[in-house]
Image (tube, rainbow, N blue to C red):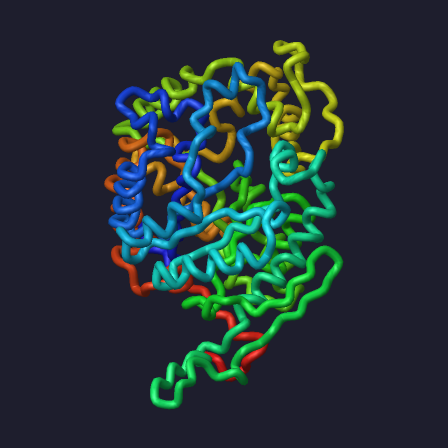
Length: 445
């Protein structure tokens, strides 16, 4: 196959370790992988050996809001805080990017700016911030609220939050710290900016008490696919985790977000679209399909129904399991997740039981096959302008992760569409993203 001029970007979705509900039950796997530092170090180093762009950690600020019969079967109830774990992983890796989720709804901007600036310095410029508005309504109960902020308000706050965090990162010029021992001058006061932000939702004086990050700003990541999510991504994000499951829908999303970015005055090439992709590798297509079926069979019905309820924002436990999905009212949950499931149900006539089985395991984009067929699909999406790469989800660990690194990555490299070594040292280098100029100090590099 002729090598593509475009290069694929690969992130690794690593919290939870497996997006599939039954990942921890697979024979031969590591059921404690979510909360075992030694395993996580191994995974990060394996991914770095495979030249992955980034190790990505999702996050929740509450246990999932599902019935105990389902919750007791979930491996997501205990995981490390991403911004505690990633600095530790920075010490045992050298190149792979380190992306953490931090909610704009249940954090304050100063906290987020300070932690990510610190991670960027500790890692030598490998940090990324996944900007989210929080989808789990139970998070509100852990932060002094009786209910979630409504969807529109969460996004409006997120947009202002982004401006404050990036403003705080620009508090110091890159050359502010002169450290003149003879003169007794540690920094040049003309190269310090106090933000003094007072907006609709936030009031923050500043400046940040951490030097400007190595990358200028850590890479900004966003995952919303709703109208509000697409717009904030087009205006702020540098990496977008897409959720399309079909090639044509992915092309439409890709064109829409990049078009919005251009209209916002941004270079569309400075936004990388990475759909989530669940990858199952086998020696033959049949073997890979059998592995997926074996994994799906480990999903209890209680987990399937609970996950479907969470994704729809509606309790489905009272629905007729063998009837089509009824009309679903609007909710305060993720708009894109609900729309994706309802759209699939209407298009296929799937019953509630079918949907629970699909969502209870993993219902998103899947590449199930041999290294060659998986590479074929990835290359088709890349060259068809449906994506710039993928955020890879592994079916179980360590075998499922090792198979992607040791079998799929070499096939992509053979085709000339994925790096054989890191060319730079920062996450921005890996993604081909520019270093943002300091808005307050034009002379900063």
